[in-house]
Length: 331
Ligand code: LMR
Image (cartoon, rainbow, N blue to C red):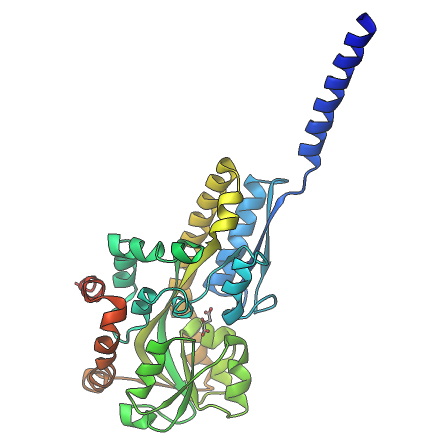
């Protein structure tokens, strides 16, 4: 009898030791973070900061692997890959979600936000937060917005007035609003992945593109585009997303720490974005590779007038109340 009890106690002790051992030895949760831009950008730096904070706070439990420059997935594949569990986080431009939700198209409406303060105000409002949760039905969780900045037009010929864009081919992100915006000035939009833009410009397969100072600088578009019109006509911002399946599989305690690390990384990324839109613009000017065309109020109004009908075209899909709320954030 005594022997039997000892054996049972020994067996129980062994199994709890084994269980503890298994917990210690179990693999950490891996978050593959895939993005398309250079590391020296707001998004690149945000992702690296997130990795660093998670490594500090959840060593051995959660690790983040960052894949920049479309190394793992290009823009048009990453959300599909996320739903399949091949990648856990990404931060695509808001323009790249239209297959999942039409409402986010609001961020592509030309001349909607006068500056980044208005963007920030709208994104942190109730409506902005409502948009952040608009992907839930599709199995995606919006974890936060991240800024890049306002877009400029680069091209092979000078763009001063809207008529100058007529007949030119522009690369756009995969957004119908952006397509409509270029149709509005009688240009031809082509939806192409970010990774192909430099070559398309260099080989003159396209005439121009729209992007932020940071992307134009970090991907060297300014070296193959002799003109940049400082139009500030649209927004390029991101949503950091994960899949619902992955997010709910992370234990509560870890999930909370991951979310906090991400919030801090985003705040850091937003500071980088603001600084880069000043610094990278200056670096492009200093390079003397391209002429910067500034628009006076009268010529800028011509662009606004030409492109603004796009708002009405998409009003049904986006919601007039949403557009009005965003517009009010300028005040
Ligand atoms: C683009 O495709 O132009 C941008 O979305 C790239 C990026 O992620 O900033």
